[in-house]
Image (cartoon, rainbow over all chains, first blue to last red; front, side, top):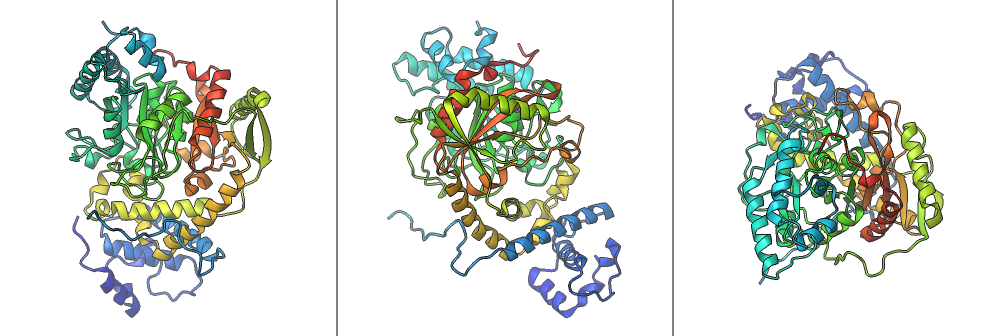
Length: 106
Length: 468
């Protein structure tokens, strides 16, 4: 399998320019209408975009069932994302593993 | 002459006594377990490779040293198996994955080195679920060695991801084994196979040379016949390691000079016997009855925190970073379980802020769980909500109606230790387990309670049929 020719930065630019609707791995392939405008809060859209990103970066020949399964997993990740974002944290709440400066021998 | 068959079921201390009494030599003991690896290990899909040449060399050295008066301690001359995610020089380390089955790593894992220094004899690399289950397997056939078979009933799974270690100890293929747990991978096979399995505190044992599924959640620990055996093994493998910054410098000694004495203060998780198999519930309640004269019980509730979300997000993100290469170069498509071939893709798109937020919430989980457990010696719970499922049945289908309340997510997000010991049998003649969970770095409390339970019962001495 070859690596994608679209790097992350280029993909972000494409995403910002709205040009991904014409990408070869079209959203339509997963059973939705590619150019249909959707309300921002429709839960399927972010999952479809995430799937598109994954397919651009890791261009494997996925069948419909595999795409559907990955999309289901993305939706689950996004459900978890909402829980994490909704948790009351303050600016002082640091991550559990604390970074430490390191110095070798000598 | 090889030692008698009953040798397969002896504890480490008992084997050591017989070795020093010259009832058999270390070479004879190694030959005995090598033979069992060949006869039973492969039939149970528990063994990736029998390390005969290395084992006989290490055993001969152990004999020479004992003859010369050099005694390296309780593991001297004792055979063991290593989950095949532990690197071993000159022997492939497959991580359970077909595309990596010939992978050679030119350094021994720290635990392998420490066990060698303790005089232990490596007889086999043991099977495991591919990539330690990190790709989201949903059924038992998720390793290039085939589904791990349960020594008590070969139609049932051995548990995962340390499927080989669980099955090997259950079948008397080795006196002890080293497994790993990111979330459930020691406790599950120990419970399903009717053996003792200790998941140490995160950082208690160096992970250097072990496959990384999740750098901040992976733990290495022993599976053995008894809690006491687990303590002996932990003493040999615990401690700081310059090669693993997460390895704690806290000293570990076993047995502790001051182990907790009865009455043990045990917490019971409210609702932990709801929605579990009736035999699991009955065996847990019978275990509490056994302990009742020696313990006090207090019902507790877990604080309302997103344990599963935090642990799941952390594992998914760290797995995605660790195994992006397998997806990028297409080797992921060679995985055994079809669901594992696409199990990493979604995780590659999780935003960084989700991972960082999970780690921020994790600190709160650690503090809350530590405060919850502080008044107690341990939390006691059924190790699992069911016995092992049938090999051919998808996990979701089998567990559908048994979704008992568990502290597993909270435990692993917190990095705290637990031990599972056998406490009876359930449907299809399969074992059930009793779990004790403790505060960080309190393994000796858990070992003392589990050892006391094993003094009062004989479940750990039961043997599966047909394995002589």
